[in-house]
Picture 1 (cartoon, one colour):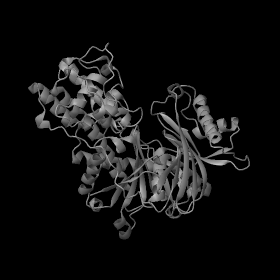
Picture 2 (cartoon, helix red, strand yellow):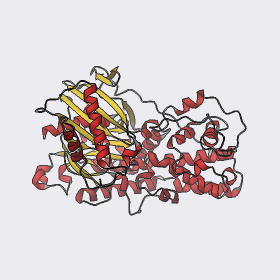
Picture 3 (cartoon, one colour):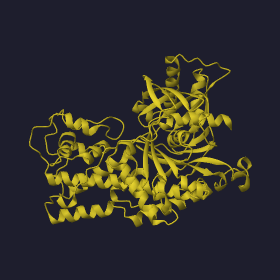
Picture 4 (cartoon, one colour):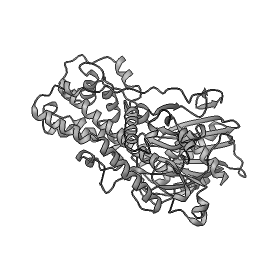
Length: 549
């Protein structure tokens, strides 16, 4: 069996004040189990189908969304092939971006670093102070990003970033001499063609951003310009994405970490690669194969465009409607895929007597957070599913009537504490307007979409482990006996019911099918560790490594 652990922050993190953390290396959070919400699986034999045609249609959906072990292996095998192609040349579906971050961390690092981490909803500024013995103090502040900044002029967005940095430094009474600028790690979690450790060009916007005129530009250079215009003595020393940060942060605690995996609003992975295997590298910088074989570099896979050719992924018409490549794993798109399935069932009069609602008809209105609530529902009549459908999505009632009941979800994350909010909320007293059959089918559809996402993530992770085995970490029998660590961040992995167990199950299925990988099924050979907010701390560690190169 694979094992899972939690790394809430770097070693022994304690909250000592609002926005401030410190570490005590004598504390051990590494082996502490991380609680996960559990899925309540719908028994398919108990679904109260209303017609034979309805039952056959649902059975067809089950077949369409289920990834059998042989198919899972085919996806994994294709992923391995695409990784090798991406390492050989530019322009492949897996970009295999060279981060130019070399070397590893050993816990002896010291210094003070600033990080800027921009995500889909928030921007965070973090000050990280490292001292001998893996001790660390962090101070941070989160800033909400105005949706208009995500679609406006790039300069406005980057000027907002600089203003947040300036505000943070002022609030924390941090004065920086001009002759000794503070090194900053810039976590920019969008597809970038990296041209250097602190430079690159934007390939495409994701996560709801569409600032025009930015594609092909260097985000690190834009940040430098606005910092300079504001007179801030801050040097952008490293440009990286959140999965690279997760990898570095987890590796700071666990030296055998080889993969950083992001499973939240978007999905991606980074891993440690031996430089001689990067065929497309600049030989004038990194040397020939003999010289490069002793070096290791972090590679940012950018797997959102995997299988653009549609040769192996089990795409459905519901996926095609969303028209995104990374949609089958990324949390941002799971709710929309589910909505498309439900609308198709409604159009064919297999749900809600063929009646939809204005809310359900609206794109992106079926939140992925609702899926978490539905997955967790253990009530006999699926009361929480009813509340999502009737109170949140207004199915089967007069939509002009306002209601204050329903599922309360947070604006960020995948249904954090959603089930507990339902349990304490006052239930709607009126009669249900959806049938038990409706609710059972909705729960099954949600389960199919969520489980497929986790199994596809397992295929990607299994491919990365197979590619690295024997080359990066398992160089001899002794090392292979020690196993590997994998840092995972993101709301899907952390909060979506059953996601982690489905991911682990998928990995075990893959390893069992490969004789040379089967030893990884043994206990503690692959250790998945949840790395909360690793991207911010990882950016500071990236800045530190940049100063060494």
